[in-house]
Length: 392
Image 1 (cartoon, rainbow, N blue to C red):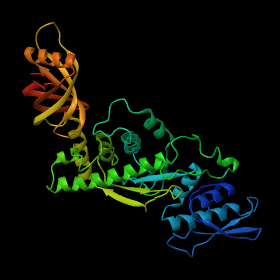
Image 2 (image 1 turned 30 degrees about the vertical axis):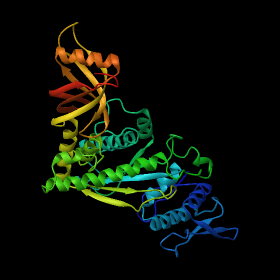
Image 3 (image 1 turned 135 degrees about the horizontal axis):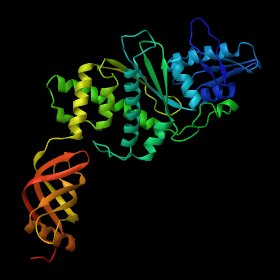
Image 4 (image 1 turned 90 degrees about the vertical axis):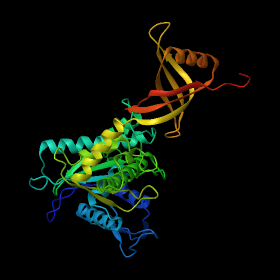
């Protein structure tokens, strides 16, 4: 890798090798228009909005002004893609990467931030990535304490960098689910970029992060204006954001919940890249998102919920007396199959035991309480065994 010289107040930026950069252009839809032996001329693909832009590259890296020429090419590509030059560079260095940037507004000189704020924002970004990656395989409102290794491994491959401005943290999300952990290991040898799948894992993570942020911001406004209750965050038809994602969005502004801007941009190396999107999250919205996360983790009980299913577990201290049963079945609250704990008196426990031994379904009605991933029916109003065929 080469580094750019410091030109006209620009920040130093890593320069990719020639084969790597031309590989990116091909992958992003650019076409080679001319090659005179000294330079190559590239034009954007037919779907590009501006067909007048051209990129000129030297035929060799040995020319004296190689870094300046590549720098100009990167700026042209960034302009056409409506992205920042640093985002394009990260995309090239990773062999494909989407980007999430957060602009904080601390009372500090440009490019600086209090340590407490920077730590909170970086921690929130990590949680955001892990939660969205985990949600692809686990569609629940409260993630289990033991997260999928796939999500942890992917988050470990993301890279964060800081840029001038109020205080900008930029997160590069690799499109590929696995690969080298070091920037440039392959690129240093000037190996062209490999083909990227049309919907790689990293794109799914980045797309979910964007969708969650947009939906959470909209719901926060609805709650703030009184159009909807905080419980809307728990309705599957309103939002599928989990508590960890909501908490991360509420913490990106730091302990004082300063307003922040979050920007999502996607690599053209994977199909279906959306135009860059930006959101502003206010202190009031952060407060509501925090309350929503707490609500999902400690949701208030909902009365008169009926669960129907099989008894999969039974427990009591002695041979007689009350006990606890676990029903694997569908509740009429969400229509989804889940495990629900119920406390039973001695007579009902005996019925549950017989149902378990006979493989019969049971039905229980009571107040549904949710604490994290634990669901329980309290204050049962009914419990009975559904007779099987041939039963009286």
